[in-house]
Structure formats: C-alpha cells, structure tokens
Length: 287
Image 1: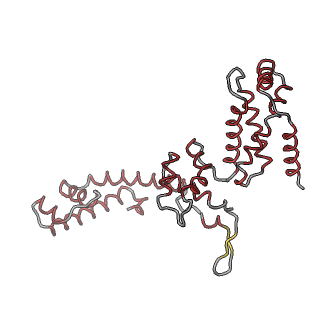
Image 2: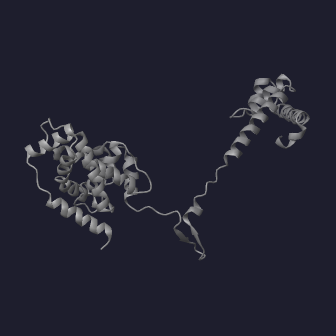
Image 3: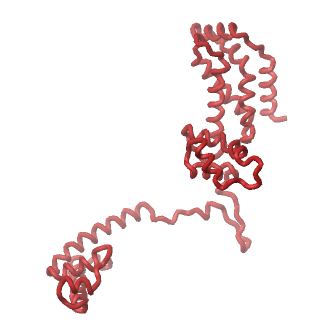
C-alpha cells in the first residue's frame, strides 16, 4: 500500500476515535481558543470535526483527485472556520465550518482538476460542481437529452447557454497533452503542438508594416498636390473611397463622357506614379 493510502487510513482512524463534543463543551473550547489562544482547545475542537471533513471530501471523489489531498484541504478550511468562528452566536461550530470546508475543497479541485483554469465567479463554480447532477436530473427517463437542455441548465444556475456548452465540453473529456504523438496517414508521427503554430505576423513585422503604411500615406498626400482639381476629384472618388464611384456616375456629375473620365483618371494615375518615384527614389518599390 502506498504512503497516500496509509495516510488516509490513519486520518480516518484518528477521526473516528475522536470523541464527539456536546454543545456546551464545544462552546467552551471555542471560547478558550478565541480569547486565550489555547492551542490545545483548537486541537480538540478540530479533531472532533475531522469526521465532517472526511464526509464532505468524499462527496467530491468522482473528480478523480487524491482523497488524502482533499481531506488535507478540507482541514485547512476547518482551521479557517475555527479562526473566524464567534462562539457567542447561537450556531453550532459544525454548521459554520461546513461552508469553509466545502469552499476550501472546491477551490482545490478548481485549481487541480484541469490544467485549463476554469471560471472563478460564483456562477461558474456552481456550474462546474452542479452540471453533472443537473444534466442527469433533467434527462432522467429520457432516451435522448432534450435539445433545450443547455437552456434549462443555464436558466437554473444563472449563466449563459454558451457557458454551459463550454463547461460540458470540458467535463466530457480529459486534458490532452501538447506533446501527445499523432500518427499521420503516411505512417509518420508528430506532436499535437506541431499543428497549433500561430501563423499571424510577428510583433516586429506588425510594427514594420504600420510604419510603412504611415509613410505611404504621407507620400501619397504629398503627391496628390501635383493633380489639378478635376483629376484630384476623380482619383479620390474612384480610388480613395471604400465604394469607388463608377465612370458613368462621375461623368454625369462632371458633365463629360465616361470615356473622358477614364482618360483623366489614367493620366492622373501616371502623374501620381511619377511624383511618388521622383520624391522617393529609394522607396520606389512601395509604389
């Protein structure tokens, strides 16, 4: 038997041997710890409630994590409860400690169940820990789940339908290693990470493109001064707007034929090209 198994058995045996506390004795121990910082009183108070820790931890065993680790995390929650408990309130310590024990175990599960960090909001936590139960309850006795199942669960917990679908996908399968080998049809093999390369430009390439774009705008604005008013209007309407005007519509606006508009446009573009090359001979490749 491994060390974890022995440790868990020892924890359970020790918890079972710890005596139950009567309400008055529990109150006295809590007062001694709170007012006198009596460590022996704290030990007796928490030892008597390790049964509660083990019981709560066992409810989460289907997540596949170590029971010993969950019990240890629950014990941390138990100690936190002891440090915050007000013995003057008419509440049993076990009632108060249950929330802290459960919260501590749930936080541990959220941190360790998957390498992909899940949502940390109260709604997301509720979705994570209740999805399986709600899904089973809503589909009980049905051969096929209702197609509106996600909508029902989303309404019950108070999250979006997309959140339910994403969490269901996460809970439906284990994490996959990026180093897991994949066998190609030709018999060769590769890792999963070989197929998730980012094909987007590198940061230095993006910055370089932005600088070049700004330069082109400056050069073009300077070159446009070489055109007369009619040439400038035609180039702007035809080439520098998102929805370029047609030759026919421009001809009607200017009172000339569309063929004449085409000729003026061609001449204006030649003048622009000549001006750009003349002003930026070292950068003619940008034209």
